[in-house]
Length: 213
Image 1: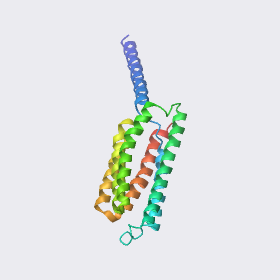
Image 2 (image 1 turned 120 degrees about the vertical axis):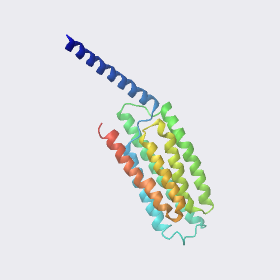
Image 3 (image 1 turned 30 degrees about the vertical axis):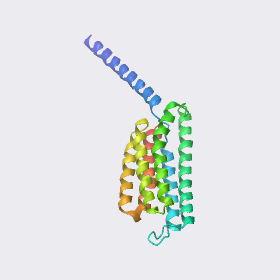
């Protein structure tokens, strides 16, 4: 008799735990942006490495001797950064759409727009701030400012998506501060932050959240 009561109690507890888990998952889906794919991070990192390699071998191979005031060099560097940004955003949108479709979710909802707002505001501010440095010829500060503002954007948006993004943001901020200290190594820290860190982060996210499913 006691065994039956204990068994019934255990089954009832398991059912309640399953119900609580289901409720938690529903709340997370309604309040957090969980369609972010690790593959987009990997591809964004690879794209950033190619962009940094172009900047290094064609523009900044000898930073101390480069004439930063030349308008043509600024335009090439700006175009390089914009292409990397456009491709990274395209990867993010495509794989997020693909993951959302696979999970029968919609991207066009309140949570998505809230996530974009908290991510986009620091990014836009940092982009304008970095552009001022670029137009004034202070290219050595661009890597630092972009890394720092990008890191702040990730920390700011992490509460609306996966918690791992918070730690990626902290890493980007630290790399940005190091780039500000070692000015002529900025391209190296930029490559690590936007390239290597994205590849590592994307791989971890894919294995943890996507590959199992």
